[in-house]
Length: 343
Image 1: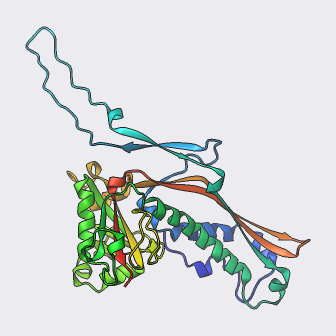
Image 2 (image 1 turned 90 degrees about the vertical axis):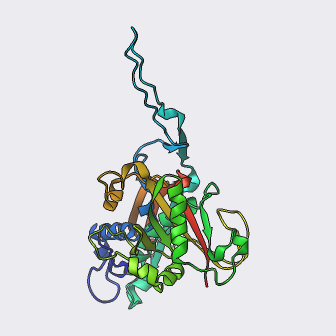
Image 3 (image 1 turned 120 degrees about the vertical axis):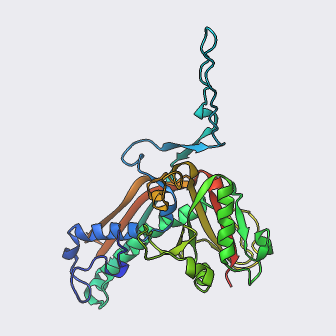
């Protein structure tokens, strides 16, 4: 999907605020939903489920592989009167359930109001601004929740800038490097997953863009599938830029380590996909797009719903946004966190 320009998501006509009658059609809503979806970055890292949408169920059960499944193969003994049977490998011995349950706090309800006075006197199109804000929320709310979930305390694959070993030791100058990308990928590969993509903050990608190692390895512009926010590739890993990549001010508490950070810090998040289903015999890097994304999941209970009303008694034009979704980390061994100083 082509990235849509938030500033132009509901262009009805040129000029200042238009009469409220221009909002009665559905075209502006479709553009708003499409814009929100197109501007999400972290959603490309996880599996997306709509199984609960429209149902009365509040819990979705997902499967997590808790250990490597080794298939035991034994040749049948056909020398005696009884033929030896195959050795049974049970999948339920290595799979555990991850239950995602929705509560009242997982529903979000937003409202933007524009006074009749603003409609009649403003040279700025307040309707367009309201719709843009709604589109940004539709994009940012899932992304931020996914970023938080992927920083689970169960994630043990972590690399730190400057060779440090914890967030408390980070100081200014422990910035992003190409070596950190390579180290992060190695930790995922060591757990039998294949590095797929990494989301970095602009302060982190700024360092990479100045690196000859990164720019020479960048394959952006080829016939490979590109993701929203993607600035290039490194060793087959899609590098995505987003301001929703986690940031923590000095002295704040890191989500993953539950410890105070030594300096202003950004956290890049790299995820992998299942190693058994790509890059194998006859496989190509582009096949990653067809695979299950095992690191985490985003579960919709109620997809974004935008409504508009002109409330005559209060002389207000109201926009409403309802949605419910939840993020969870699943295969934490397929996640590496890259923690670096801001400057």
